[in-house]
Length: 424
Image (cartoon, rainbow, N blue to C red; front, side, top):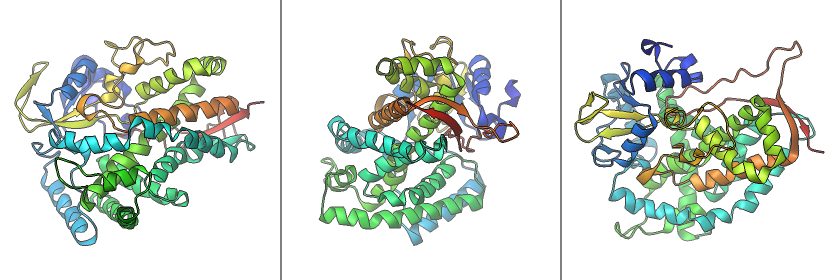
């Protein structure tokens, strides 16, 4: 691929962006995307430096927004009117705030997602993983994405957010709509549809907020609804809660795990020697598998910062107010930091330095839960299955096309049809 061919909105690049990342790392480590105006940063050391430089690169109030074309401005106006008339206008999310406001709000989430709370979920997560496998183990085939990777984390976070298990596919439709709008590949009509779906979700969760205010329980959501932020002198209001339900709980709390569970099985089938090692010593290799999958197939390809000041990087001048797109997935395959970065190496010594969950102030608050879901999900797979393969049609042609959902920011397999031999 040549530099002038890099276009993350092209379906073929969206499906496999890694060649494009390699070109950018070598030829243009700070590249201004001609379509969006974003300054795309792709090398590991640069991405990490930006994450930790909260004076020059910000998220919240000092940010001037992403794309300010007249068409985008008109679309945003229509979306704002929809929230105002039919639902609740989402407040800035935790990820969209800077300190000290971010730190004050983050303390609430750190309390709700404290390690002891996450540890208490292990028994439920492990039991659920085996229950999901029970539903298809006798068939010897499944769509791994639909039958395991989606429901496992969605049911787990749904239980903690007061949702009924039978509603998970309705919730999945809402989160998919929200993710599609985040992905910046929608028409105006599709963006309006996504907003209407989000408002539908708001009306589902509003009665749950009101119930928990009257009758607190031991869920994460009850903590978020009822815990006072000392510096604010109040709990989160409805607009803040609705913003967090989509961005930081249901999307943040399920999409990462779903996408990593999906990609992980694809990687294991493509690399039978890794599957053999994993089966030989799960206790040793499972934790490393989780980190390598996150590094190789980062569910979050890249997120944003805004330049608070004029800065220069690799000779490229970035004016204050510019949008920086930091590509975690490219950093995680940077040969300057990871030896043979395209390999899934269960003995890699620096795997845990990957940036799949970000780093610093905005390190993903759901990372501990995601890691447990991935560990216990893959553990159940290793215990229940001896061998796996990709399914084919009767004529021998592949059943899988390995399509990736169109999205500028996230990476998700649409489906993964596999056959397997159950463990004896």
